[in-house]
Length: 457
Image (cartoon, rainbow, N blue to C red; front, side, top):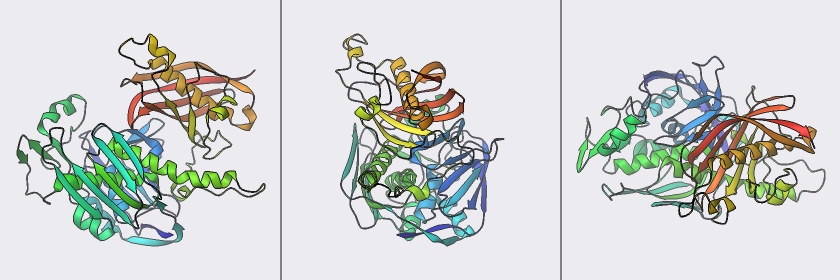
């Protein structure tokens, strides 16, 4: 067990956002025990709060974005890496825009803020998440592994698609090695990516003051390289920030080849799922009347004051047989294979998309793609499970009423595992409204806001 830690006093910094290009002020604040890391949008009337947890990851294109309802904060990884690297487990990050300032593209400025604020040890303890067996995630050329290790170590190899600037680095993380070996590594991009990024509304605040640009064999920067392996060290910085989204300190050895935010966040989900399995089994075999034990990551999970509680269950994995006891849907229209998480007003479910799906016969021959409307149906079914698990709704049926703000971003193909994340944002009487996001390998493929009504059979 480790001691929880927070800041002694607030610390402020102002700059510009990397992707928005807007001026932003950020304040790091002390937080009570068991708060975890919490982002607060002080520019919004609601002062929306978004917990730094992997279930709130909504986008991973060039940075990691956290969302809750309509509020979001992007490019959170550098701030999270600084807090994690220095051992801060409880803090509130206030920003008056949709992303923290980019500073010089590294975590150096954020480390200065934390050191100036001071770190205070709290009386409460937090149990780290320990890797007890190998975990592997592979997607294309990206390979992410987690192995048992007495400490926290990251070994990483990075390069571009053409194998340019291949670099390797390995480090065992402590507050000292974090600040000395990793924190100063700046973000970078390849020159040929810039036009695409600008056309997609990204890096509006990017410049050689906050990023390194690689053009063919030349490295464009306003100062000498800070490390010989600065590129791969920044990749490690991103891994630290993204993996902190598991909500507790990690104990294990991460081995990464060509990592990215999508892969980092997928590995975080895998680690969290593995960590919860023993606790779920322990609860399943507890004698009647025993009080359930919370998962090891519970200390970092936050219950917002404004959250609409709709489920009587905490984290409760469900298999297909259990799902069919809740939903009336059957083959070939059952679009949820398992539920991996269900807490409060949120649920995470999965659909294994196989070549045997009947819709692939006609959509399309020789080019199989899962219809977008069926992804929408998967969101509705997952939301239905969440609502129908509530004791008051037992035996009812959820009727799909409407869909709004529907976006299909990428095709879903045979072999993909469709992850469905749902958050109920309004529940009034028999009418419910939810926000749904479908993703594959950490990348969003579709999203929508859906409404449905609950009625008796």
